Length: 386
Ligand code: SAH
Ligand code: SF4
Image 1 (cartoon, rainbow, N blue to C red):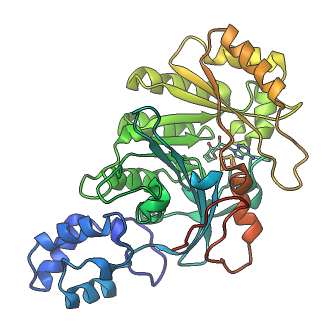
Image 2: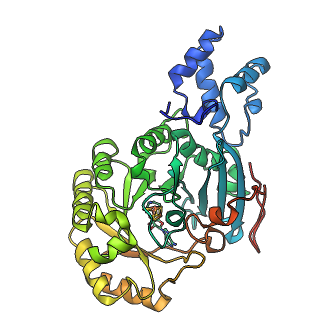
Image 3: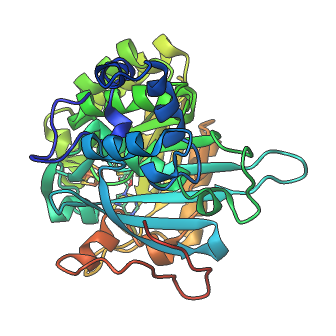
């Protein structure tokens, strides 16, 4: 169970511990195994309500609905792009806060299995305040509960035709999700609930998503990285670096004033050596701001000689932004400097740009408006909201 719940709201099924659920059934004269039955049914793809759980007697289903919520997400507005391969949802929570999640499908090729990545939010808003990020510009709303974090994944899991494609059949492909904490919020500023959510996601009686398929992206909250080393050594770590020098990083990622580059890199190197897991250094390329050759060389020096990998992301400008993304030629030059220094570097694909725009942007566009239930981006397949 999580420590914070929206006032007056019933606990969401995704956060109820199996033993409390068993006790709930036993108190009603029902066998304890009903708890496992309910959990497995509620986490089964295409279950859309407690009323779908026909292996529970009808009266019991009604009682379950009076004690628990099927989801902590009240409504979702879904946009689809890339011919159905990318979908983004704005979710409304019980107290009216809104958050975002994105699903990206990578179909298998030549016999290799496809994969599905779900990008989720850890907070409503964010207090870090990075000036290029729509979430940062909108400010901090509140912490998400573990249920609100898990329910974003469940939203897509419960609509597997959206998550896994129209060709999806029951029993196929489910469970092969990659989860990235790259939606709204700084996950390590909400570490207790994020860690609790990861445990729930891992639970074989629920979604059973392995820790190695989960990535936490942080702007550089050093104590949170230290906790990951001790508590979640199998979860992947991404550090949003964005500048190789403190003067610029103080501006682009203001939390740098608290934990400057040297401290963050020390924590990253410790993570890599203790867990033997490759740390991803995220670097948003902003035209004329952080994309010069000297910075590429400094970044190469920070990344060389340990188990790291640089992931370059051309800026996706927020509305009214004074900045734009580095050109393709500029990106190629930057990558070449890194590779010449022996640093592993990739450029992130710009999936779903027309709907994703940038982290937090769709939310900003829809602020103050009632959520329409379905909207498809131009030239794409439609999708349904919850
Ligand atoms: N707060 C965490 C995780 C959420 S942001 C973090 O900052 O790491 C996830 C990633 O999206 C971060 O690397 C962030 O810098 C990047 N991002 C935010 N706004 C962006 C934009 N406008 N264009 C491209 N990437 C952006
Ligand atoms: Fe927060 Fe990450 Fe956006 Fe910075 S980039 S404001 S840390 S969500």
